[in-house]
Structures are given as C-alpha cells and as structure tokens.
Image (cartoon, rainbow, N blue to C red; front, side):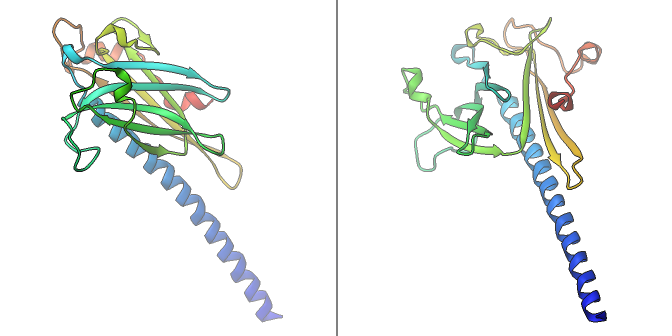
Length: 221
C-alpha cells in the first residue's frame, strides 16, 4: 500500500511537471515568433528601396470572417540571395501577408521575390520564396502616418513612402487554468527624407510624443 501511494504521488508530480513544461514551451514559442517577426520586419522596412523611379510601397486590407488581414508589400535592398546560384540584383519585392492553412487557420507569412531587372509586367514578380513566420499571431495591424493623420491603407499609386509606419502584433495563450495571457510586439519606423516628401526627423521627439500609437493588446479584445 505504501509503495502504491508513493508511486501515485510520483506519477502525479511527473504529470504536473510535464504539463508546466508544455505550457512554458508554448509561451516561449509564441514569444520567439513575435520577436523574430518584429526584428525581421524592422530590418526589411529599414532597407526599403527609396528610388522614386522604381518606388513600390503598398498597404492593403482584406476582410475575412475571423479577422482583418493586412497585406504589406514594398521593395527593399537585400544582401542575402533568395535563390542560391540564380541571377539576382540587390533589390527584392517583399510582402507580409496571411496564408490560409489546411486547417482553415491563417498563418502570417513573408514572401521575398528577387527583382532581376528584366521584368516588364507585374506578374513577373508575383512569385518568390514564401516563408511561414508564425502560427500563433492572432492580431497583425498596420497603420501609416502621412504627416497629418493615420490610415490603414496606403495606395501604391501615391508613389511615396509614409512618414511613419506602425505594425502591431499580438498572440493569445490560454493557460491550463483557462486564463488567457496576451503577448505583444510593436514596430514603429520613420523614413528619412526623400526629395520633397514630408517626413518626420528622428530627433523631432516633440512631434512624435504627440502622435497616438496603437496598444497591440487592444487588438485582441
């Protein structure tokens, strides 16, 4: 009887440890995905191609039954090849978008398409290398500041970079107790002056302090 009791206690403790470890692994995975996506997005936007002759910067919104799905597409300068041993320039078309999986859930993905330099039609840059970034990001919001007000859409016809871009991401984790926890990341980036385009200087802190930014966690409420 004593041996059986000790065995029951040991098994119960092992189950508790395993469950706690599983929850910790999920939280770690969610935080890693948020951090990786935020760092990658920040790097891509910082390298945005600023040539007015080949300007491409577009922000779209697609509505779905579950959530609003932003699409962000722009050209950026890159040093790593998307396709080894293939002819490529250092300019790439990059797109952040949601792709539905076989289970019906949307996954945030990143598409990178090299611009070789001989394309004549837009369809020729519609392919590229698609990478899944996250399975857990439940909220992905993008806003653009034109110097006066925020907007959720940035038409490609403007042929301009926004003064400021804000990208908010959040994930929801349900603990074993049923309590929900929200983990969030936000990327805020200003663009340097380009010709006669009005832009915020990074040292213009007084102006930035007056701008109202999004609370990423509010996107999941």
